Length: 127
Image (cartoon, rainbow, N blue to C red; front, side, top):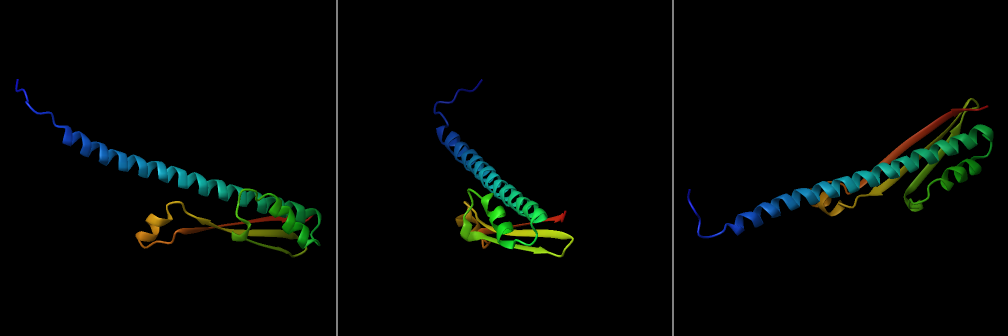
């Protein structure tokens, strides 16, 4: 058995730095994904509620827009684009939302786009 006279504390510090950076990257990725999924869920729900309103009152595009916008709490209203259309048989509500990524600085440094466009459309038959 060989005994060492000096502890290898430098190796532990290097291993800790490598593992910590990977762990922080994983945590940031989970946070980013949960923000995007939450925003998409909110946008999809708003489009569905706007289309539901349009099923009952297809002649009221302002009401369709208001019914959809009521369900976008927590989102930046300046980054929402909403459109609705009806053809007598169906009502469609389409929403686009621009999400600014928290990791935008890293994405921008790597040459990517630090924003993400979420798009959803809901179509229902007029009653």
